[in-house]
Amino acid sequence: GGRGPSDSGKSKGGDGGKGGRDDDKTLFVGNLSFEVTDRDLEDLFRDHRVARINLAKDRDTGKPRGFAFVAMETKGDAERAVRNLRGAELHGRPLRIDFSGGGKGDK
Image (tube, rainbow, N blue to C red; front, side):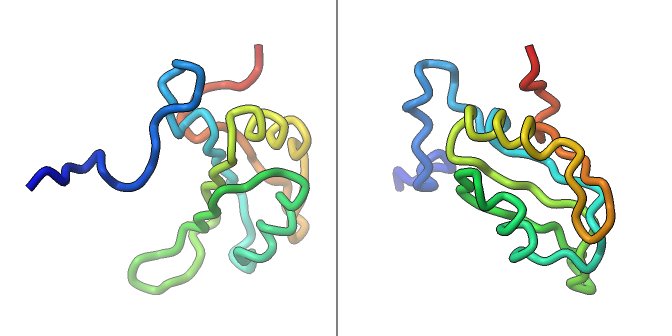
């Protein structure tokens, strides 16, 4: 044995003792058009250091659900992306971008 759920290959350290919670660097991107693709999101976030993009899709139909989660490399990258992309539009729709865990990056 010895392989528990915490052994998933993700390191939890390196965040200066702040707990290393992924919520601090994962963004919720809402109000997406159903035509938006992973590539569209990669282009939108191209000036930011993205670790992973997860465009939510319906389990049965495979169609987009209108939102995505974008994991950034660091909490600072996430805060910059929220500041820089607030009010951005994609496919003619104003995006809602915020921290996925409900934690606000604002002071």
